[in-house]
Length: 252
Image 1 (tube, rainbow, N blue to C red):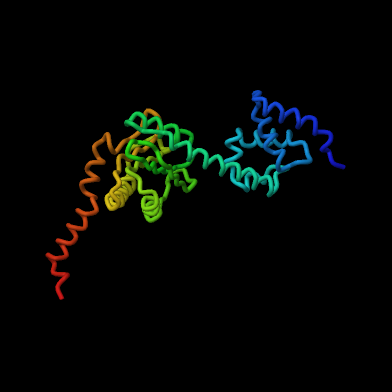
Image 2: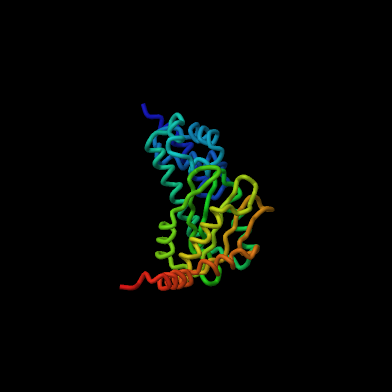
């Protein structure tokens, strides 16, 4: 026997509360969200169970499918629905980023701290900017590991070619609490500079976030100027070409 009639009045009251603009608790909002994938059962207990397991609506949306499906009452359909909602929110966030304009280093520092301060794994982000400093898009990379994040340079090259930004800013976090760049960080910055110089894109900075009070900036340290000087694509090609001619490798 369906329990829909038992909860029909409650659902109508909840929907009326939503449409009237009344304040809804997180469990109430989640309960309403679940109406559309669980039409014939009381979704309130499952809403509470999900919040207890993942801590917040954001935690639920970002949870791995296998973690969601370990919750009693969550099957494939509910999991698919939740992951679809999460993808919608990710895309909305990307669109909202278009109104963010980074005019100076303080703006960038706040923006980086806002995005990286809550991360529990190492993350690398690329911020693609227009000439006026407006953030066009953000690309995030993670291996879901605490101490490392790997990014294929070929993947970044495709992003630069497709987006054709005016400028690029790199940001990533060190969960160790030490923001000093590693040899790997230096090499990645050099690789990014080569790609940027090939495509007439300005590499503005690479920041390493350890805490809001501990952010290393290649720009502020002066290191970005050294990288730009040493890893300019045309300069590297000219140098290699001269070495090739000098060694007689182009002779027939």
